[in-house]
Image (cartoon, rainbow, N blue to C red; front, side, top):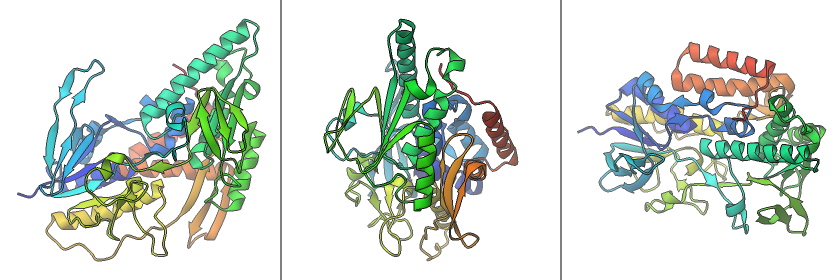
Length: 432
């Protein structure tokens, strides 16, 4: 029997792969497994957290995507792997009251793709796991938004009683996630008064601090990009603290290695990621950060029928180092595996060319009005600096490309463009 291709994880790479293969091979040959019912492009989670993007408006139903792209969707969390029998276990699904909805199942595969993404790496910092929030899943962003709403409401009530109050947010990690969240929160704080918080001053009473261990934020990007982002954040009253290493996190403050204390009502951890611990428990070769070690063709080392892509895969670059955990890498790997797995499914030997990562540059969102970044490639030379509205339009185009990849229709791109233009014209802060 020709068993299906099973893809575990419906993030950017896993979902794009399922859609491409489903349209080519059909639902009997392609299955996607995910614990969520809806997909949200991970780079958008900072907008969901800030309340400037409605999670219900942005989310794409996996069932709808499966129908339109001709793959099978299996709801449930990946629980275990039996590589010898080419079989995975999918955990049972319960409702909010604990009632069983779907029992535990096993799926037999011909080829397996692990696309489980990443989780927060707290680097054993005392209190970090207990007292910080991370933005790795839609549920994380929604919890942040609700917590922020409660803090804003409490501050508004204290102000009404004549007591000084503020909401203090500390973001640990000056990479793309931390920078984008800080910019989006500042933009959201400027329009909170439209939603009932009349006594709060957005700049004064919503205090944002961004902490980075390196000597500049966005350290992997060109220095000009970092400098521009730093200037824009400081113009918007975001306190940027560099060369600052966190020693501990308490419920009400962050302390660095020099003994400085940063009071906080809400702390976000954006300082590092690691692969889910479950992968290391399956007998697969993993790195210190839990990523699955793969060959140049993205096969898991020692396995003929298991591949891995995205944040959970440790793919070595030709010159050393690993492919960075970026959406563009997952997109490229999905395209590579779509061709390889289709050839295997049709009984043809796959091409021998290894996967090669192509860095097209990076764009960082700094709110609905502006972005900043660098583009790379033959058209731009070693690096081309972009900022402002042009960079913002380019940043949005990446989102549109993802939508087209998973839906394959011009109608979806048109709707997404319209949604972006509406958002620019009338900023939204979703508070309830």
